[in-house]
Structure formats: C-alpha cells, structure tokens
Length: 226
Image 1 (cartoon, rainbow, N blue to C red):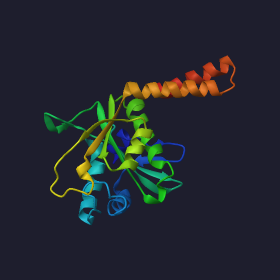
Image 2: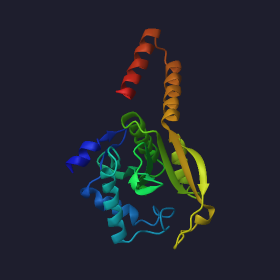
Image 3: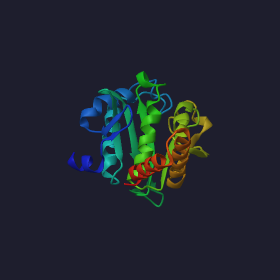
C-alpha cells in the first residue's frame, strides 16, 4: 500500500475527502456494483455478481500501479462513503498491454443516497483538476452509454465536451446500447482557459481594491501552478 499512497495523494473538496482506494473499501464498491439502480446503464445493464464485483474492486485498485499518479479514490462526506472516482489508464492502440501516460479516462460511481446533491460533479471536478494541475496530463476523456443522461450531464458540468458517438457489438448487450455510446473530452488548455474565465469573473464580482485584487489573483496562480 505504501507505493499506492505515495503516487496517490488524499484529495479534498468542500465536502469530500478522497482517499486512495484500498482493500478496506471493498464492501463499499461491491455494494454499488450489486445495486440494480446504480448498474442500469453500466457494463451489462444488470447488477454484478459477487465474484464480478470482487474482480472490479481488484482492478480499480490495480489502476494505481499502471501509470504513476493514476488510480481510484474512495470519497467520504462526514465519514460516510459517497462513492468512488477514477483516473484510469488508456491503452495504446498499437500495443494494448501498454498505456498512454499523458491522458486518462475518468469515471465514477455514486451511491443513490447521494444522487442529486452535486457530489458526482464535485468529485469529478477534483479528479480533472488533479489530472491537469498536479499530474500535468494533456487530456481527460470519459465514456458512457448514450442513454445515460445523468452521467453525460455530470461530464458536461465538469467541462468535458461530446466529441464522438460510437457503436460496439456485445455478446450480452445492455438495454439502450442500440443508441450507441458517447465519448467526452477536455484538454489541459481548455481546462486552464475555464479557470482563467472563472478567476476573471470572480475578480469583477468582488469590490476589492486594485492591490487586493492583484494579490488574490497571484495567490490563485500559485495554488494552481505549484
């Protein structure tokens, strides 16, 4: 676990503490994977079996060993498990056993108890911030079924844009897959541009003196760059 903890820092947002996923979190991830509501638009469109859920948890933990800095985080609010968020490896097209080191695929699962409260977006935005500001990646992508409007809305609210709709063939196709799957993406340049707009908007809304405004702006840059 030491190597995982070294490459995966604990991350924090206004409401979430995001800790590197470990064996102690397996009960939480399995509960999500075996919930028919959660899994309606994921994988097979059905709850995973116990064995499948165990395999998924093992894979989620292994992501921390594939590319430095990548991995899965378990999110807690006031000590209660909310869900998990991932920066996962993207295989190279010409060598699937190897992974790209400049881009990642982000994803999440959130307990139904916390749906509609902004946690998916809050954790997702922190994943993307970490990917660009801390890891210096070039691109973050996300994929889901076309009919999964909730996940699509979360990706859009995190700044990702729809770039492609594609169709795959599956031995046991989940309901709705006939409408295809979608890929969303945001580049490092696009993300930093949104941060600059946000800072500019905040500065205009505040009644700071010019000197105070400049101090706060440079303070923001220091936080983002160092």
